[in-house]
Length: 426
Image (tube, rainbow, N blue to C red; front, side, top):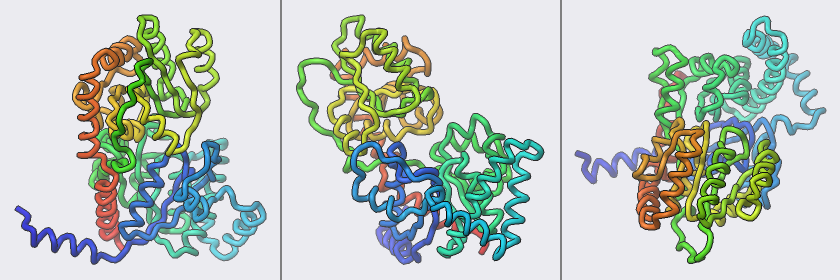
C-alpha cells in the first residue's frame, strides 16, 4: 500500500526529472479535425517537455479565426511543403554535397520500399525528398529522436528520414486506415524499426500485434487520448419545447456513415417525431448527402453547418439533446468523448475502439454499423425517454472522467515517453 510519504517521494522524483526534448512529425498541424494533437502538445509543454513540431502540410484554415494557441502553433511549426521552392532546391543540392552517405542511405531505403514497382518508387522518391528536408531540420535543431503521429504517409517520411539521417523514431498509431492496407503503408516495417509504439486503444494495439513479429509486442503500449473536462462540461439544457436537436460532428466522408444516419433520421420523421439534425463537418460526401436531403424533402430538418472551429463546435454541442456518430471505421473518436463530457447522450457503432469508450446501454448506445433499423431504434429510445437520456448522459461523463481525462492521460503520456526515451540505447 502506498503511503503519503512514498507518494510525495514519487511526485518529487517526477518533478526532478530533467525536461525532455522531443520533435513531433505530423501530417497537418494544427488541423481542425485533429485538435487533440494541439491539446496534447500544449499539455506536454506544461509538463516540462520542449517540443519542436514539423508538419508535412500547412493546414488551410477555413473554419473561422484560429485561437491564440492555434496561431501560436501556426507560427512555430516547420512546414516541409510550405518551404519556398528556391530554398527546397538549395537544400536538396546541398545535402548530397555535405552529407553524401545520408543521400545514399535514404535512396537505398526508398527504392527498397516497393522493389521493382516503378510507379510506387516514384512516390517513394518524393517521400525521400521530404525526409531529407525533415532530417536536415532535425539535425539543425539538435534532435536525435522523432515522434510521429499516425501510420500512413507521414510516418513513411519519418521512417526514411530516420534511416537516412540515422536517428531513432517512435510512433503513435490511431487507425483505422493503415490497418486496411498494411503493405501499402509499410506498417510492419515501420513498427519493427521503431524504438517504441504507442496505441490509442487496446483494439489498436491488437491490430498492430497482428502485423508484426511477437518479439516486437513488448514495445507496444496503450496510451489513451482525452478531452479537457473543464472546457467540455455540462451546460443547462434549454427548454425549447419544440424539435429535439440531434448533432453529429465528423468529416463528411464515407467512413463516417452519414447516409445511414440520414436514412434513419428520415424514418424517425416519417413516424412523427419532431426532430432537427445538425451535421458539423465538411468533406467529399457533402454534395451526395445534400442531394439525398433534397430528394427526401428533409431541408427543413437537416442543417449542414460545414466545418466549425473548436469554440463554435462546442457551442453547437451545448444545444444538443442527442449526439450520434454512425461510423463504419474509427479509432476512438474525440468527438464522442467531447459530447459525453458535456453530458449529451450518445449513439454510435460497434466499431474498432468505440466499445472501449462506450459500454452499450451503460454509457451510451451502440448499434451495428450499416444498420439503419438499429440506429433508428436506438435514437428513438433516447428521443422517447427523457429520464433514460439523463441517466446515459451522466454515465457518459463519468466514463470520460475515469478513462479519457486529458490532464490525467497527458501525465500518463509524459511518463510513458520519458520512460521509453530513457530505456533507449544512447
